[in-house]
Image (spheres, chains in turn blue, red):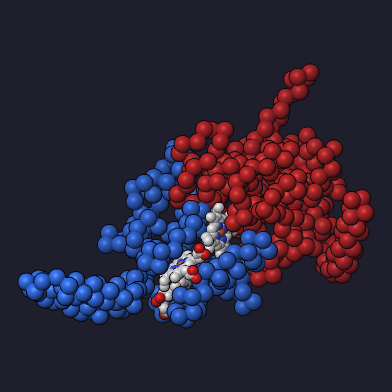
Length: 196
Length: 259
């Protein structure tokens, strides 16, 4: 990205200087101004050289990602696709040591969900969503969240649903999960924590 | 073709021998310990064992054939099971679809004998056929059968052509017509894919019984059809059971009593 910008600018500067040489000298102030502008661009550019996507890593009480960050950045599409075949087609949901599969999308979402200023989980249509923040920058578009849940469900305590409108939701304690009014209206009443 | 089927039958027989050998050993130990225990107790311990056999890390085993037995003579409200199913899978969150377009994993079918006026209702979900027509017609391999006999859609491969919906004699599959939000984490679902009852794989893999079974007050029994000591096999052996449209010879994994 940085390299590309530089190439653009050097092209620009040669273009302008060539033009100013060809034309009469009274264009010199313009050329100087142009060069000054380019110089200022270049300094901005230099300070931008490490400006990647800004992603938020949530607090995880010391827990690490499934792989070191460098590997994760490169390999997450592969491990996700590998493990979704294992889970869906073969019914394998845990590693040999009993832990959750590395490439479990549920896990990524549960760990990487971040909250906005209002303490609500940011959804997939928000630029701050962990996966989006990076993909937008990298021009990657994934369809996973058309089906997969984009924010945690809580500890299995409630299910979002909209077809039980007649039921009284007072028993549901919002706790730390500040959902929207719409989400609240959709929370199913029965507590599943006994078996989930 | 016939040869293939023959081979498969032989394979089945082979696995049966293996299971029964295991069961012979376990069975005799159990019998020694429980000579005075009532038969029901035996059923229960047997069932608990086969449920905990499922292991998260080993995945679906081809030694088992999971199935369900629905007892329609028990006067239970099948809508309870349907509701439990909807809740488990987050169904019913369509906003713009017509009622007949909305996803149903379980349909409650009311039948009436016009001659006698006798009526009854039964829940019809995916029958988890051994020879599943939906798998035969699927162009992408999305319609699939897990080694343990559960027939389901691999949404990652589904292109939404809906051939399987036409092929299914039980009308068990639904198509998602609109963009969905707020799915449950255990059942991702989205526009443009076919879906159906997956016998709650997410629960089974954790050693739990399907949601409809749990909500059925004992009217639906879940278990391993290959294991002669499982509750479901014992009940089937004792009282028999019918498969719907058995004439199609698809060998469904869902049996019914009282129909």
